[in-house]
Image 1 (cartoon, helix red, strand yellow):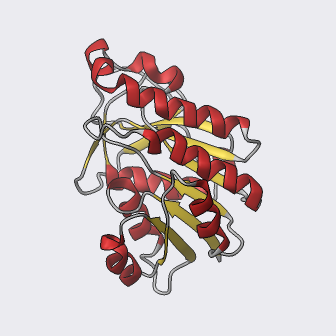
Image 2 (spheres, rainbow, N blue to C red):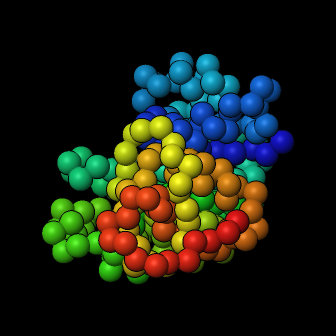
Length: 225
């Protein structure tokens, strides 16, 4: 069984990932989740996750949390701030701390959930969107760069605009940085889980969109895992 360490499971995509990973009975993975807020611990433990506490902005917390988790095969992080948070450091500093500790721990694979608009996918977003999200996307891009430079085997997934609705099953990955659209969080979680055991996803940067919810109807090549 794989030992997986998940950061960002208190809400959104991370919570959907935890549900998918633990949906089998018994679970097919050992999942440890990092939480800062104990409010969410009972629900995640009821799913079958091991909960460790710590602040991702504190490197010592991350190191302690990973040491409690045994030998970790894969780190998944969906951590990020909202445009209204005024505290966007988790997008950069929190994820950078995770990367640095993962290097020390000899983690085999690191999956970072970023966002369309980061890095070379900045061309996919309209100028008015960048006015709102530009600062947070720059933080995400720094985390991406840090991961790529770390030497870890990585997969970076950049979802489009997120909705909390049931999965459509129409989500795809593409290496085309110009594509943008909407995607449901449950579909992003499925794509993350698909990348877990796919060597074809190693050291790749993907945009994740729903093929039926593009902002602009364009031709693009989806990536077959």
